[in-house]
Structures are given as structure tokens and as C-alpha cells.
Length: 109
Image 1: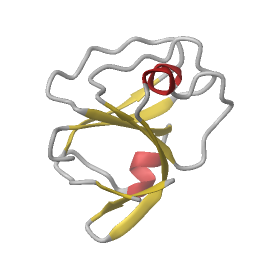
Image 2: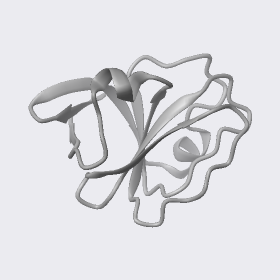
Image 3: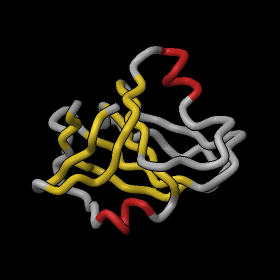
Image 4: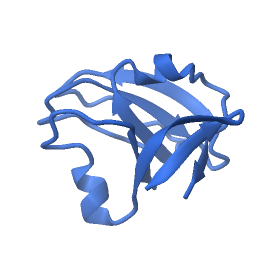
């Protein structure tokens, strides 16, 4: 388990998904999520087969948020070319956290 931190504030706990099977599965099959998941080496996500809407923060190589999107179930948004990882949480989480493009997220173990 890791923690997402920005500007000295803990945002949420997070599972970091690094293996190909874990990254491919992501949040599929879950009814919801407390906290977040971080998907390494990720420029593109989908919500095909998901049961709930998610917020996605795309991070560049410096862990700077370059885009935040809310994605409803069964959607395939466009890839974010500069992204190196994605942080996924239930829809509304990023707004509650006050997260915005330009924020830097630390992933602490």
C-alpha cells in the first residue's frame, strides 16, 4: 500500500499496479474503491465492463498532473501521449482532494 501526497497533504491510500496482468485488470469487476489505484506505464485507460464512473489523473514522468478526467462506464477516452502513469479513483474524488492539473503527486510507500 502506498500514499498519494501533494503539497504536504495526504490525498488517499493507493495500490500501485506494476505487473501487466494487474495493470490490465485495474478496477474491472469492482463495485467501488476506497482510495485510489496507480497504474504504472499507462497513457490510456478504458472503462469497458466497469460498474461505476471514475476520475483519472494522468501524470507525466515528473508525477505532475497533466490532465484530469471523469470517465463513465463503458467508455474509451483518447490516450494522453505524455502520460507515464494514471491515478484512478471513484468519480468525485479528485474534486474532493482539490487536485488540479499542474499539481505534483508523490507516491510514498
